[in-house]
Length: 133
Image 1 (tube, rainbow, N blue to C red):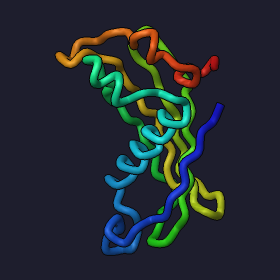
Image 2: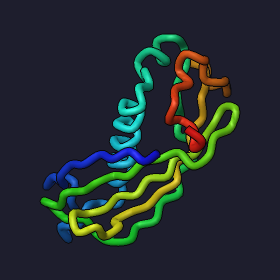
Image 3: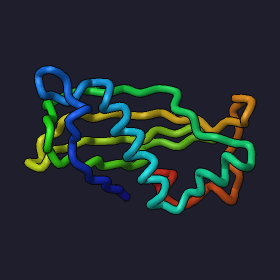
Image 4: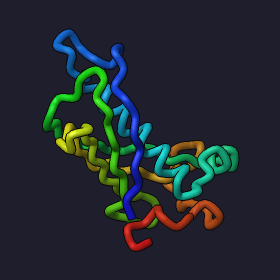
């Protein structure tokens, strides 16, 4: 299943060419992932309180078309891989015309507060974290 997050580009996210700065796309991707987790009912605050976290371990991003101030962007987010303690989420950022601005595969890992890999506790392993859901 795919999940969508929509927002508008703000002035301070743009560089001197009026394009969204490439580093800002990482913020957009994080915003889309957190919204995706909320949409599937994942209790992020709860898992952190219980001594776990989801860390990003790798981002593979391709920039395709520049977004500019005022563009309405939509982030499409969905899981593509799931292992025992990690997974990969695919994200596509499109502008209001449907042009792809950026596309990324983001690998995450479930860890303890000490940073050690750990399975997500059963009560947090909600439908939507795996591509099979």
